[in-house]
Image (tube, rainbow, N blue to C red; front, side):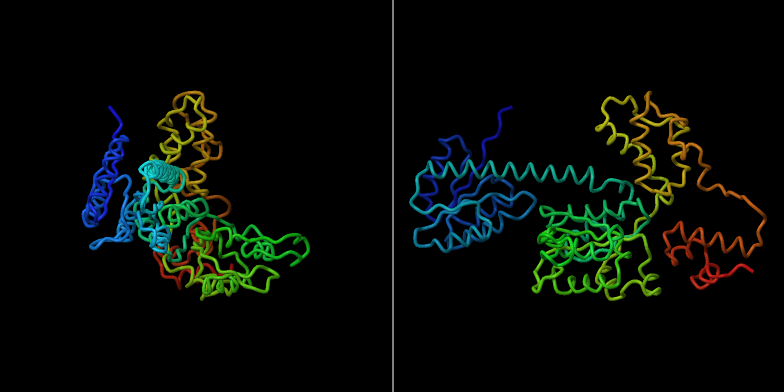
Length: 448
């Protein structure tokens, strides 16, 4: 099938000029149409029938600037070439600022227009390719591990469109970074940088320098200026992972950045304005940290405008089979010579029964190991990682050691449940079927 000729719409309130240009473009192999009214061009744009729009800037009904705005709506912007009189250069420059691809000053030659139409088409093709690539990468990596969590994905789509602060909570390995990447990838900032920093991995002074930057000589070892991650993320998104581990002094500085939109590098005397969306993630209960005096309540309210809580994998057992199939397909792209296509029934049953303390991350690693080392089409129970193959079912109670008094057993079980649920007291109380006051009593009861 022959490739469709690019559709070029030429609009000018002087129809004779528009027709002359359109006829010339048809002679060069384009599918061109001449229009004399901006409202007609607007209808063509909204119908998705335009690859490049060539428009006069000043028209009586819908002018060129309005058409530029309309051409930028939707997923794939239509490139616009503006025609303007010699005395309207300022307006032409304004059209470029509004998003026009190029402007031509009347009179101009047809060959000149053809050159910029070709460039606009090439630019549009590159933009569509980049959008498709970003979407593909987003599906493969950003949403990795979120299979089955439709409610989470729906919330991601809703919050992505704005710049509101989002607090992502959940145990280690549940996919907090994946959710943050998905929010960034679906947002208007998707073309900008996405930067993540683990606040628990660096000491206070080093983390401050990493976040806000420093000037040369600010401290021992500062041999050159450093911009910092907030500056690096300008126009994009910064994820503060494990934000609950940040020191109180650094929390105060972070609060100032969130309130003022500006940073001050270590050792600097002036602040710098930054345009960054901040997302935060933690496996801790921030309200409990506030009660303990280790986290600022005002900072929590800044970070927690919207909360997304990710359930542990042991609470999503119905999703495990789909996740396994997804991770097999991913692993096979990295290890194409593997014969593995599935897990045997007993092996899959063990995956379904396992407690998954490392959550989705642990499952992904287990599947990749099995795909890499597997010698047959189906991974057997014996070929699973030893810790998984030998593990008792997650729901099976395990009794060891001496017989305990019921109050001691109650205290130990409550402590275990509290740890399993990531230190979330309210969630633990709900799972145990008691109120928070009773749970607190169980957790703090001394051995007697």
